[in-house]
Image 1 (cartoon, rainbow, N blue to C red):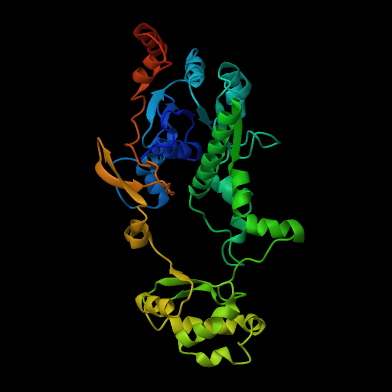
Image 2 (cartoon, rainbow, N blue to C red; image 1 turned 180 degrees about the vertical axis):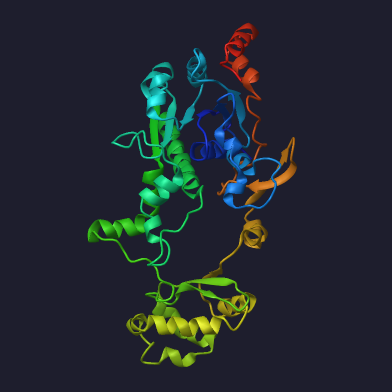
Length: 403
């Protein structure tokens, strides 16, 4: 088994999720990922997991571990004289730079593409921003709930028609941008190897959010209008809807070809007559009487628990899924068979599981290679490897450049 990115050095000058998530996947692929943090550490280290709604005392920040496993940490104060020079020295021997610094900060610290490419013409320079590097909002801060969910349009399409936009889970947009960034950097790396020239990669949460919403936006570009929000009490297609079972659990039906599945669905429900009933026999009829039909289906599903409906839905060849809660997702035998979770041994927390890379490559060694580093754990090791002497490192530390 070969680690695909063995021999590739990545310098990560980034915080929070989107860019560090890509760095973690590159580490899984065998890259040497050097995480550059301020002396107090990436602010995501200090994020309280209780804000996600967990009523639990966590020993360490397991979310931070997910996006920073397998890296080496160097702490550098970029706002101190000599700090930016340390990062530039790191980039001189790097293959890839990952950064989410604002453009204004990159200019201030001399970390713009032209300057780094002048010193290292083969560098793949990859930036993640909230809103892109050009335009009136280029320097606007943008966490994923703002840039990806709200500004890119998804939030306005969620929830019942008369309800306010629902709260969205953080990290979804970041991790989608992570995969976007990983793909783009791999293409840029291939192009670099073909041409010998460094490349510039730019990914934004806003642009990623627009692509993710592409099915709706592609239609809106032509129609010039906002589609209606989904109303589960009056769906356009009752076979594309959620239903509550007797035990309070929900199932989600997703059958976009309703005429194909409607007769079998009616038979499964024990309502075979609906298949030929003039009120419900056609999609137009079902749409016209959607509210009353949905009430009828609600009543049927409410008569049995989710396990019973699982057997019946599978036996009838329906396309559906349970609305799973996280403890069920963790135990899901299908995810387990895909090796979706991987063990980590941490010096403080001991052995625990985290998520593995969400892809498999035949013949490639893709693995979680260790826990996230502590802040500055590898500062001396990495910088001495650049040729800095012990005296130089001591001077930098005394001047507050190194944590």
